[in-house]
Image (cartoon, rainbow, N blue to C red; front, side, top):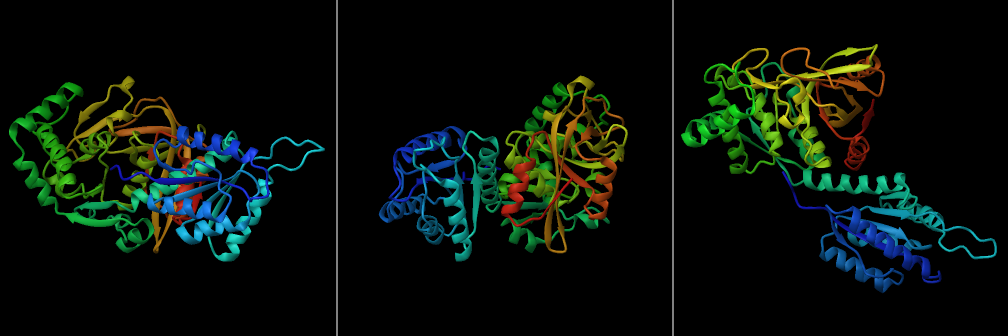
Length: 450
């Protein structure tokens, strides 16, 4: 699912009349910070402070040549409106204006930076010119300022990556699941994602055509990894065939992530895919279940913001007001990396209808971000919640976790219903709340914070 990295330009500026000692110092400090902090991005940084029109134009030319996606402008000292205006006008992209704090004052000494004033002036000027910008106040040592810059850049990185993706539909939606319908034009407009489709019959044909030795090898791996004593006869073979077939088909058809119609056809074929989808997630292959495209997009956004952490598409099935907990459960699609080994995960059939493979397990404790993108009459909304996953055994068949939520659970559940948010949510074991919020803002998606 990995796409090209974000190309970031970072410049340090001042107007010509201001002393250069502080700007030179800031240039060294902030370029070093970028190299140390933005390791997952390609950096384009001039080796000197920008002051004159010629210096600015040369930097713009270099950044355009390197196809920079976002520019961070750090105030070495007071900077007129011309530099910010030239960048957004000639590069056609929003600018992140970053004003560090003033150095310590000395009564008989001059003002050395005046960065906050300059940023205020530049932002106002860009607004009058009709150019967007972001503003950040505070030095790189201030966690609030640093986090805002990082989350802005992470948001642009996600926006870029999603705009290069192709969704693969395996079937349409389960019977009577109106909430799993989707608006392809709204998806393309909002996220830039293309969409193509592969019939479930193709998947079944792929399963049948697999070399027997390859299927046997995966069956042996599964049998040696999980307790399969309660898995019905023939279901392990179907599990391995589907796992291998989907993994190959995603590459053959060039899909960055997929959505599958997991019933009723797959139920009839004794190959319900829950556990397969969990295993694929740990391989970095995202395929959302029950034809829910919007949940699948949410899952991809979380994976981009939290690399290496598998999300969990799930239902919220119950709540406990005394403990302020919500119970999140699904049929058995939780990735093995999420399983709580303390309570003995097992690979069984589907917990409700049988006829497939599913992980029956409680999930690991830790901080979770809960999210859901939802297209409501052509406009996407993002619901965000957070809480602490508790170390508890499962209460019923399937994959589940009890989460102590930050907000009151009864009011939260009622708000979700009142906002007409569908029943699937996506959990990720990481704090990406602010990053999700910032990413949504860059895509003009309203956020419902709960």
